Amino acid sequence: MKIICIGRNYQDHIDELENKIPSEPILFIKPDSAILKSKSQFVIPHFSQQIQYELELAIQFNTLGKHIEPKFAYKYFDKISLGIDFTARDLQNELKKHGLPWEKAKGFDRSAIVGQWIDKSEFDDIQNLDFKLLKNNRTVQHSNSSKMIWKIDQLISYTSKFFTLKIGDILFTGSPSGVGHVRSGDVLVGILQNREVFRVRVK
Image (spheres, rainbow, N blue to C red):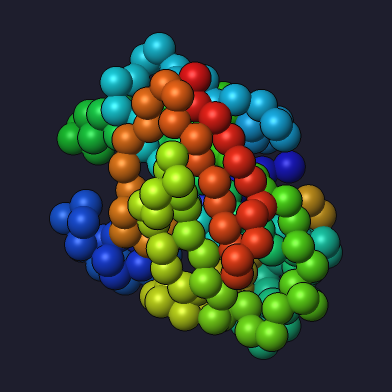
């Protein structure tokens, strides 16, 4: 199982990190060891002084797929939730400076929260989903899937050109603006369409 992550899929997040709009989706992978087990605490790793949260709408694939056309993409997943892509920003910036891959900053152990899955049939329009992240009861990220640069069907089609999508694989669809640091004692809560899908304490 793998998590396929999309970078720079919201204009406001691109602006806050002073990046450029890419001509096509940016892809990177988190391994299965990145998933934080349910009800576990997120422990800040010793190798970074700047761990940041990035809230993302997530989908889970239920059908094996390769070279999927956008019009058929909806057939390949049935579950939706929220996830957090924890990022060692100081490490990532140093790696980017030298033109090196991001894996150490993005794919380290327990660097991904995956919330409780909800059947997509419970939503009228997956491209109009409201979601937000609370940190210590204060909203720090709030957006809607309608603001994605590349929509979910486009992302599925694009990623399936490069990776075989297997049953159980997860797609993180990109983060909106509002990313920030975590500190010991923080409590992070993900809300999708007014439903809490995860609650994690930082240690």
